[in-house]
Image 1 (tube, rainbow, N blue to C red):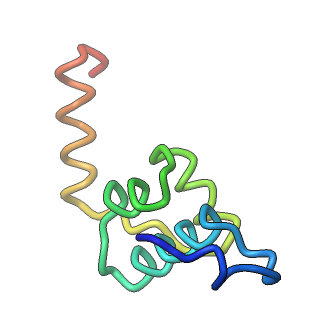
Image 2 (image 1 turned 180 degrees about the horizontal axis):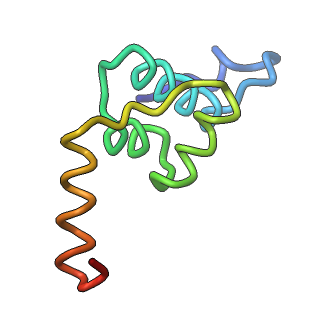
Image 3 (image 1 turned 135 degrees about the horizontal axis):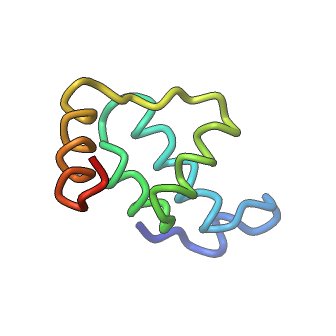
Length: 79
């Protein structure tokens, strides 16, 4: 996504801030999953989760997510 500098001039909005806001909106509206939204924002998943929390956006963590996490923990020998 490219934003012309002239379009942002005088707004106090940075391209980084705009990317984060778009990513949060896409995740909140279930148009992007966590990984994709974090990538759009240019952040790690953990940092993106922190940003979601600051904005009061709930994290969608379903049964399938839990199964994947359990599989990962088992493959690492932690379960």
